[in-house]
Length: 349
Image 1 (cartoon, rainbow, N blue to C red):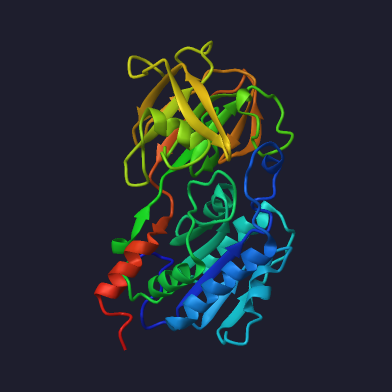
Image 2 (tube, helix red, strand yellow):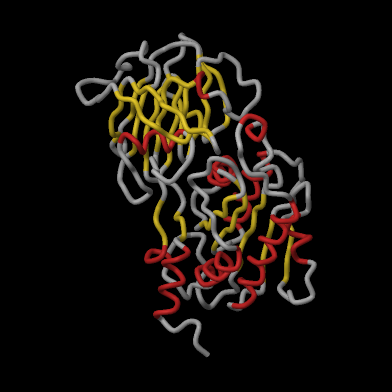
């Protein structure tokens, strides 16, 4: 049993982390990306709470956020469950999410429901990779979170948290990309690491694809948008598949250090690089990555973007390495969980 999962005899606890900033970055100005307003996020959280309550969950702990999304969602006369906000300073930054996930693991949260994008969930996993998760998409170009009805997410999270569903049967362990600089671990990503020619972090969100020259993926999903969708046109890779994908866009780059006969290409693919933006993307080379494989990147001035946001810069004096691992949190498959629950008679009186 996972450290985060409670036993059926203890009081089950579900966590909620909702990001009010998701879907509101600069990419709304340069693409046709959706904007999810706060009131819709509140409604989604309320439906999660109603789903949790219907399967007997009485205790929920949540992270404070600048828009008070979870607290507003609780203001419903049909809700009787106990909502407690984490006792921690609220700085309304990414660090809040990291700290909140760590505290939730220590408190024994049996399942965590998140609202946000790839970046939000990356922050959660930086805080704890032990919490089983249901990630509801409210961001941009998302791969890790999915479009899940809040009611169904609440039902599944509640059944997992109180141990009525076996976590191993209804979830999949996720993959991560570990980033090393000069041999020292620096950071991680859940879906993609992108290298940009730009030398400074500046605006964090990636919106100009012409600056990207090399990408590493844990997942290359044909039905996604952005960097993952480009990789999927070369070779689809799902959360279930071991390994990942590595491709280079700049034809002048050639085969990077660490590459060899395993690299394939060149090729040109048609991919949706942003909402409403479909482009021909020239690929100079690509290859599959194996779990545990560490790739050395060509030394040059660049910024490193993690799950769609620039994180830090490197210089030619620094050696950047990327490795794919299956050490991320278990992602609850809501449809599988509800199917298992129905087949087991958990919804019958």
